[in-house]
Length: 180
Image 1 (spheres, rainbow, N blue to C red):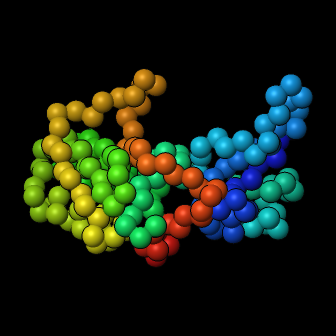
Image 2: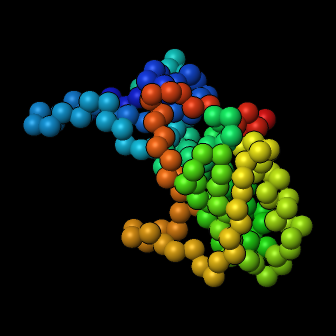
């Protein structure tokens, strides 16, 4: 009943490339949803790949998060919001909670709730990695906070972008470091 596509720059994403998930609903005759952008990012798979289960339909790769969680670097590259959660897992001794917020291009705010073994050296290592993935000239403001607020759905968002990102008007490219 649906056609699911993974698009980047308005065209099908190449196998292994991250794109925006769009859906066409074939059963809704009252209000057609044609290439409806649901806000999710996913990895495109090879359309000729056959699932080991024998089902025979195209597959979608890993779900990489939400479009509104993309943090853009200084030269058009980006990292999905899931990057921060995965990378910062190894620093849970120093960073109890965090949130990355981007409100303007070439800059971001890193909100930090300090953990029991926080140190400035750990913070410097984290910020160096962020710049490695997003650009050495990325401006990063660090805010030490008591808590990271939940949104109305009861979740704490690891990253929030308030930039107008349109995955379909211009294709974005992930940080080259993500594929290393």
